[in-house]
Every structure is written in structure tokens, then in C-alpha cells.
Amino acid sequence: MIKLFTIGFTGKSAESFFNLLINAEVKKVVDTRINNVSQLAGFAKGSDLRFFVKKIGGMDYEHNIDLAPTKELLTKYRDKELSWNEYETEYLNLLDSRKIIQKINIDKLHENCFLCSEHTPEKCHRRLLAEYLRQVNNEIEIIHLVK
Image (cartoon, rainbow, N blue to C red; front, side, top):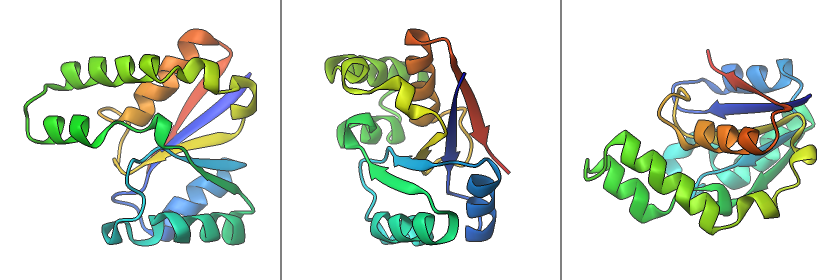
């Protein structure tokens, strides 16, 4: 079984965030945000996060923008030009057009954690991404790290 975790940093203290990752025994954080350099990200700003996950948890870090929605897609959803269902369809089509299934070695996702900003996974692309990959390999167990 491939354990694939997801986590969002919004609404979590650094202590809670890193404890969730450490307690789950995550080996690699895969940042799926289009913009990981915003000052609003606090401890989860890309360059800082790379340092923190290594120093605090001994984990690797990767920023993979191929897994992120486009800025245009995010803007349309946030501006309510798209419903959640429309956003979901557009994002999944984007993954298809980017040939994500061919680019990702699913077996190497064991003990990886998809990261984005949303507090919970219900309306978040990290959940959609994990479920998209599980359709290809039903050996993926998705575990959402929330607190």
C-alpha cells in the first residue's frame, strides 16, 4: 500500500503543522501551490519551508507547479466565476493535459505529503490530485492531515 498524505498550512500553528508531518512519518513534502513565495504564507513560504522540513523533521521538499492549478483557474474560482464542480472539472482536465500520470512515478509517492494552503481537503486541489492518482493505482491510501 502506498501511503499518500495531504496537508494545508492555513489555520495551523507551525508547531501543529510540523507535528502532524512528523507524527505521520512523512518523508517528503510536495508543495503543490502555484505561488509558494507569498509573505502571507508565513512559516510555509517555499524557501523557508524547505529549510524547516529538513531541519525539524528530516524530510525532503519539492515544489512541483505541474500539480498546481493555474492562476487563471484559481482567480475564476475565487471570484465565483466557477462553481466548485466546474473548478474540479477544469483542474482534472488540466492534470490530463499536463500528462501528470505519465510524469509521476506513483510508487515513489509512498510517505509523501501534498501541501497547499487550504485548511481542510474538502474544497482543495490537493485532495483532487490525490484522488486522481488513486484512480490509476488503487493501492494508494490517502490520509489527510488535519487538526
